[in-house]
Image (tube, rainbow, N blue to C red):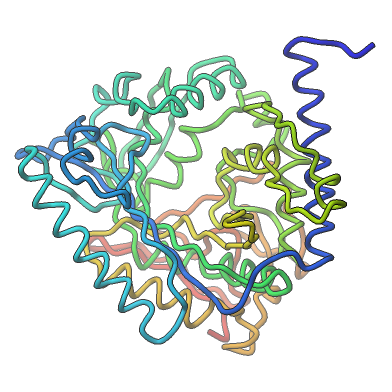
Length: 427
């Protein structure tokens, strides 16, 4: 006799997730994934403000005025998001992205103006204050309320936000509303299964460069913190770990990673092995039985489990029109004030380094020494860091985002709002 109730639901969900993982491995072996040539999609998270540049909690009204399905809600009522459909990664692809974004945003701004709102692109809105970060700020979509409920159920206590920068911020939150302060541009690149590890490793290797080029989030709740405050804020605003689990080295849900990979399977397997489910819901389909029948499973439990694990470079397995695609999703590009900057960062990533540093620069990403602390050389190439070592990036760091150069420069201080970082040799 099988047990019933919430605990049994978690047991069944874990079994189903592992069955989905087995199916995923089989699909990779049997080449079930659709791939002809690279496609790139784009999402931009935006802020809504009033005439005084204060956050405006009216995204439902603004979206109704815009009336474009490419624009969607985000976590906070002062957030919206634009999703651009994937395009082939060709010479004209990124230029077409820019033209499409400019046209869509200009039209949306005109309609938002009529609704008494302005659209702003920036990593963290400087006018956000602690008084804005309450449960009332969450958008009406039920999934946000459910996410909030499950994070606090897993954590068992209020969130602690502690960031020491030019000034010190220490506060608590009883909702995930502070996460809504973090906005970004998210490129997602469809790649072939056999190439995914190379793309992902290259994306990891250049993460610090992307952040250094686009850093524009120095202010939060009226204080000047890091040049790129989103890193600490996003990690802490979604953290399901109390202090005791942090001390044990349990990994945060906002995670850079701790090693190079050879396959996308490595990342999904890590997510299943390290993170408990936030939403233990089960579907009726059996993924292995569907494969035996020649059908493609949706891998619903694996996808749901994977959703609230926010890797900086995020692997995505998507079922679309009965075809499966793999995507490397870059979450760490800033939602900046200039589309040309964003386009430049995207071009830098997608066209220069997207295919792997070994192809473009004759410097394999995996030759860069791994160091999950965000500082200090590892004595061995590919050495895995202790999971207790947390990644940090500050404007005056010479090492960042888990790697360091073999010949690092001396530390420098950022001036005039610019951040500086060193690059691995050979770039």
